[in-house]
Length: 129
Image (cartoon, rainbow, N blue to C red; front, side):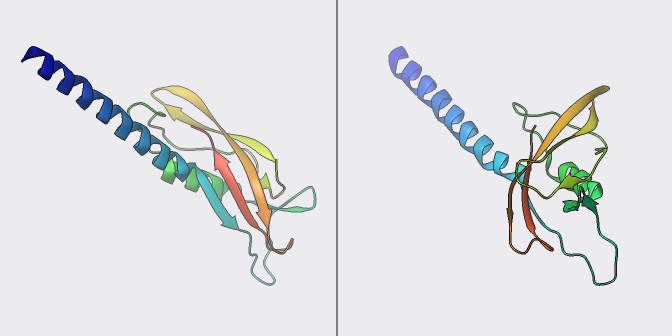
């Protein structure tokens, strides 16, 4: 009878670990963001080195909104600050910062892909936990 309990307990722990792994994978997909740079006619828009860019306020808001940690992944962060806009060029990188438990946390951001019209591109970017 003890052997049956042990097999059930081990099986239950394995199932919970598998479910936790699947949940982590699904929530990690929220790190990828899509932003279409669509300036209003006659309004200024952000450029970096002559290229359209994702405004730093968009980066900050999206990271704050989606950086919800799981107990085993990430940290609970405070206000996010990005020092620069993110150039809409595949491979462009930057680093934002936030506070977590009194410590400064670095949050790398990276452009994965840029599609559509170069004047109003759809930028796919990702932040790291």
